Image (cartoon, rainbow, N blue to C red):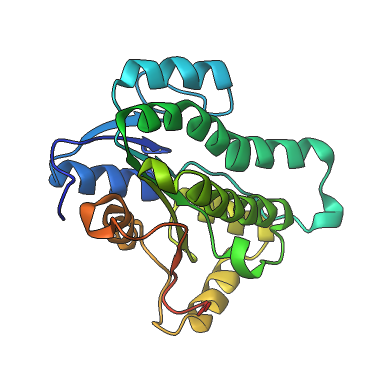
Length: 233
């Protein structure tokens, strides 16, 4: 895709799953990728603002930010507690806000940039057993639209990609929490018009597109990559 070669991108949660697939695609496009992840070397805790600030400063001039890191566990809302809410919010919402607050000033100073936030269709239509997670992902969508308006005149484009059910370690942990993972997996598969759960490799194309020059006239938009599970207008 146009405009990715030679750029520098930060990818959060880039050590596994969707993030690792995104890192691979960017490197194939000739993009310099910096991974922010607790499992990376050096590790970066995105929930720690000061750690994020230092890591962003060490990354140099950042052209692209992919807010991908996330975590979830299946729990009906009335069986959760404030400590659980805080963990979900810290990873899925505050972490992304930390990155945005630390990366965007440099983009403004340099005259532009691209941000792609990986939310979830749970944030568009809701999802049973994922109330705090859905709230965070809905918050990311609203945050992205607001910043897209605020920063349009600064030549910064911000968009959202919403995966549907995707075969990752996080999904596996989520389904284990539901009690009967194989039954649930089959129910999900039957609900998807394209007949299968997503794979991490299904996401990088959409993310790379939003980060590329091909998306220069697109901002504040939300794209689902879900096999048709949700068809949101």
